[in-house]
Image (cartoon, rainbow, N blue to C red; front, side):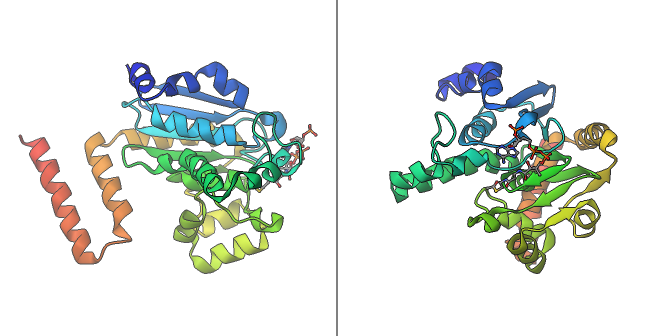
Length: 273
Ligand code: ACO
């Protein structure tokens, strides 16, 4: 059903076929209300390409309606070593070009490509789902930002976050700057990004970057447990509550109170029709 609908919306189901995803280095599995996206290029430390980001966007567009929890994880020793460094070479990534070819396409088209890449990250914040990044080992650059794109981060004790972009002459542009500032505050975000230093598990926990640190061997179980806890609440109430929480920062207390009342009125009507 979801596949047929997705095809009507432009053939996305075809783009997220297991074969196509395997070529890109991704896996996507749905088990009832839980979807799992696995970065699956461990030999290259799950380095990401434009194809990775397009595929993530397609997965978001064709996500089956029953899914409530999306887990994002990486195969092998590292969650993700960030952008595929071949992008910085003149040869680039086969079929996807390089930065030196990308600058020749014109500003508008280049900005459009960045927005397309960002689409792969933005959907992970939808109110209809809760996304969990399960992070072990290195999460560098685009890898760090992918973890930041998720609602929650559960990490192994060997986690090593690094926002390497400024060290390479770039800015973090895969939607990571806002969640980073919101999680750790402006001063700490400046410290982390402008030094491109590594944040290890203890500090990540202390500054609020992650929800939980576990031993490496316990990561999968910890994520499963969290998913089960998240699924234990009422689905519609969870969606409405996430919407409220997401809007809280940009509203005054009075505005937020009004928003709470509106959501609650809808809930009560649904519960007592
Ligand atoms: N792009 C492409 N290939 C990569 C990348 C990457 N980002 N990271 C690692 N690889 C490859 C290596 O070239 C190596 O390939 P090979 O076996 O064919 O030689 C393989 O993955 C394993 O890498 P090692 O360095 O041997 O693995 P190790 O576990 O010792 O180190 C680490 C892991 C720390 C992640 C290291 O690979 C590294 O520093 N990678 C580059 C990180 C980086 O600068 N990313 C860009 C950030 S900026 C951004 O994302 C926008």
